[in-house]
Amino acid sequence: MDIISKFVETGVAAINFKTAAAFVPILDERKVEIEKIERKTFVYDDKRRTRNELDVYYPLNSTLTKSGKTPILFFVYGGGYNSGSKEFPEPFSMGYRALGSFFAQHGFITVIPDYRLVPEVKFPASSEDIRDAVNWVCTNVDVIGVPSIPAPDVDAIFIMGHSAGDVHTKVLSLYTPVSNTVQARFKGVIWSAGSWVIVDEKKRFRTEVPTAQYFGSQEQQREREPKALWEAVSDEQIKDHPDILLVRAEREPDWLLLSWEEILPDIEKRRGEAPQMIIGKGHNHISPNWALCSGQGEEWGEEVVTWMKARIN
Image (cartoon, rainbow, N blue to C red; front, top):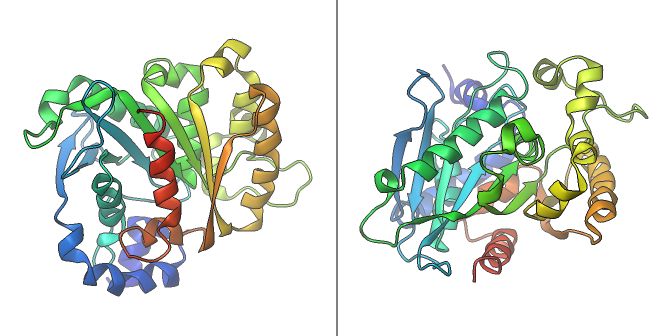
């Protein structure tokens, strides 16, 4: 199998191959520095045989929470609902390795879980997998902890999703049957470059087949899209919802920009204030994550770190 076929098979038919390929030599030059960050892999659900592992990246020097422990960031990758992996094949293996290392270098234990995909599962199974990964970490701090840094702080967890992973994160945050066991632990949610609306009533974009496979019929899509879940939760749940940070690239596809136009007023209407936003200057949909640890275009990541640190200090 050639490199491109392996890349697409592992997850990234929706990824701009040229963008990812452009970062390969840059990240390879920094491989030694990136790999100074220790990474361990754990099984978070031993009832499943596949897509049940998570990678944990450990800071050399922790950012300390008020309790003197190490905060945690979960990252949920995208891939169009039917693809994606916490680790790409060569020569792309430094992709999420670099992302995990970047946030660990800034003092956060960083966790990247795999989760099940279409066609194996339907809504809300992917979000349930992510919830299970969060719960596993919270009940296994002695297992994932390392003696070189303060213990993981399970009351100082952030979660960031990108693209389809962002939608799974929104569902985890807003759909009560999934969120009720983890919501209180989140200090903040970072929604990055994912849909707010699945069905566009004005027909400005179409719903892709994997999206429909995951969310169901058009009626189910309307009921299950993040916008509808946001509108369905109670005022008390909105009040208790973790702080929200919105992130997108400057050069996103039209469907995402249309979603962005709706999410901003929707959040402001119910929370009484506009959410903080970060726009990755010069970036396209894919490049922000690949830029981390490259020395180029990392500013958005630095801003995310600043936002998180403000909520634990």
